[in-house]
Each structure stands twice: as C-alpha cells, then as structure tokens.
Image (cartoon, rainbow, N blue to C red; front, top):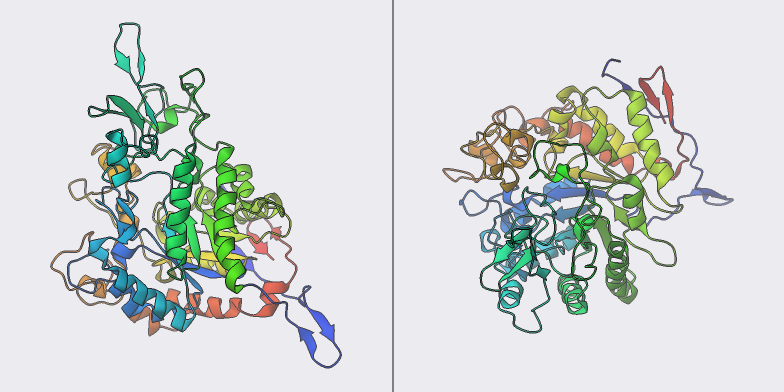
Length: 513
C-alpha cells in the first residue's frame, strides 16, 4: 500500500474572473453572501452551557458567538433546537414551532438571531421533515383517526401470512435496525418509521402535510433566519402502494447473517424516490418567496447519503432550482488514513465533474454522524485537510471542534446514549455510536473544558481537553486554531475565490492546484 502521507501545494495566478478597467485596475467579481461561505455546525447540546445543568443551550451560544466571527465564519447551522422528547436528541420533534426547554425559550432564540445579525453571521436551522416524534399532536390525532390528521402518517393494516397471522405490509428495515413498521394497538394498523419507532414518517403524498411543513418553514423564516439544512432527504418518500400492497425490497447480498441490519436489503423502495426532488424544488420556492421580498438570499442545504448522481440532482435546474448547497459527502465518506494524494484528487474531481454547470461546489469533512477528522484521518493530517477545506473552490463546512482538532472520545457501553448504538449490543455498539463525536466543546483547561460548571455533563468531556482547547491554542501561533484562522482570512482573498481551478497530482502523493 502506498504511504498515507501526502502534500497539498497551491499555485495562484491572476484571477480569471476579474476584468480590467483603465482607471480602477482589476475589479473583483461580486459573490452572493453564501457562494464563498464558511459555514460552521453547532451541536447545541455540546457547545456552551449557560445555566449549569450540563447541557448546552441557546444563551450559551449567544454568549460565545463572537468566537465564530473572530475565526472567520460566515454562517452558523444549528442542529435541532425544537421541542422534543430527546429520544434521538432533537431529531424526534414533538412541536416544530417551539424551543426545547433544555435549550431555552423563544426569547432566547430571538436574542441569538439578533446577535448573529448584529455581528454579520447568518443563522441556519435544521429542518427535519421526514418524520415527527410519536408524541407530536399530529401523530396522536392520526393514531386516533381524527380528521384531517388521519392520513398525516403512513398507515397500513398489514397482510396475512401463510398461517393467517397478521404481519407488516413489507419487509422494509429501519435505519436503526429491525422492521420499519410498528403496530399500533390503538389504531389497529401498522405505521411506517424509517428511523426509530418513536419517529413515525410523515406522509408527503398528502397535500395537507406538504402545506403544514411549508408553514413551519415560513414561521422560522419570519424569525429572520437565512435558510435551512434539510435532514435525511433520501427517506422522504417511499414507493406507493400497488393494489393495496407495498413491494418488498431485494436482499443486497452485503449482509447475509443479520436480517435486521438495514444493509441486508437493497433500498429500492424506501430511498431516493423521484418525488423527493420535486419536494425540494417546492421548498426552494418557499425560501425564494422571502428572497424576492428584500433581495437577501435564503438558502437550502441538503443532507443525503446517496450516490453522487442522486446527490447532485438536488441542485435542480435553472428552470426549476433546488438546493443551493447539496452537501458533498465524497470526502467524509471515502477518505481514510490510508488515502493517497491521488485518492484525494479523484474525490475532489468527481464532485466538480458531476455538479451542474454554474453551480457552487461545497466541501464537508465532519459532522455529528461521523468520526472526527483528527480521529478518522489522523491528527497529523488535521491541518492538511483544513487547508484543503478552506482553499478548494466554493463553500466550506466545519463541524464544531474541527478547528482545534478535537478527537473522538471513547465512551463505555454502560454510558452510551446514542439510540443508533443502544439498538445493538456491547460487542458491536462502537461501530454505530455517534456519542464519541458529540462531546462538549473544549473552550479551556478549566473544569469540564470550560463548557459547563455542572457536576456532570450530558456526555463526558474528552480526556485530552487540558492540552487541546481554544484558550491554549490562541496562545500558540502554530496551533491548529491559529492555522485555521489564517486560512479563513486567506480564503477571503478575491484571487483565491475567482481563479480558474486545475488539479494535478505528482507521484500519487503531491497534490497541486
């Protein structure tokens, strides 16, 4: 195997996008605010605790948001902050219009939004349209058969097997293992849940549901946010019934001895359905309503772990635009510690080749569902990949803590709380747990890394926080954080933004562009 180390070298010439004026020299091309945006994902539960309960909150974010402006961030994306039973830590929403009490109040949110506006940061919210919590009023009324909510979710009476026993209507498997169908004693039917059984799927073949969720978007846009990151898009639609039956999915052949594993099936009926792309275009129309009012662009970012072809389809077309930023997971999905410069270059080029003309590229190296850069790709490479993130053409997305090279924290089976892991067993849970990448942000070498003064934090602080934290790295001119800040400032140069992009690899390891 070729050695894992490689180098990135930048070559900068005159910007191809500039034009010359006899009196003023070169004029820089004007970019919309998001087109060269530096976005930063905050996992609110882990960023800053203001009230000593061990859980991050909105006031904590407001109190520390100047830090993000200082390090060169343009837009802040918050993972879900809405009312929730917290079975999936906010991705199970029981009220799309309310703030989770642990995180604060609507007034706290409005204060944060105002603070962001005052310092020039754009605020992006997570939008979780695929499902709600089973504690949402919509689901409770749907389960009771109350109109107009009866068909807000996907219900089916099931089928009879050869023995006359009622069984689920298809063999579909949940992302969190086991059948994607759950029996309701109250309604005497099965409901679909592509994720946990406490996260029933909304029915987007019902126009009333479509309009309900558009109104959710409008509510938060009226609060002054700059757009939405849309969660779990490939699961939004399933194939429709034929003669009252859902089609089974074929076995994938990838996993033969674990029929409860989602990889056991090829998801031909439950992912990437064509109707999903039309729904994204409809949501784009909603945000464009607001853009048209004041000429300030609201944006859509999409999350979809799917094929490159399917992902880039979310851009839409000039006639029917979709998301401005369909998250590019090429790097996060395929780079490893063993990756060579050639591997890196091929992944970069694959996205640039696949995306439609006149679209803006984006680069994502970390998020709340994947191992951190320093752990996944190696601590010595952390700065290297941040160099790539900040110098490749287009948009950069940074997960909280990656700027200081935070690492995954090992968490025992006993202390594991991520449902994706809790649905497995002690022998395999580490393959599925996302807890290690969601630990509290490391502000300083004080107790709990300066995150909280609580006796116990919701997840343990990473072991090495006394050496690896913001406070320490601000004092070191060669630290990960200082390197990151230099890169974000360098990134704002028009030369880097406007130049032509050519990618070259020498001897499989030296990457030049």
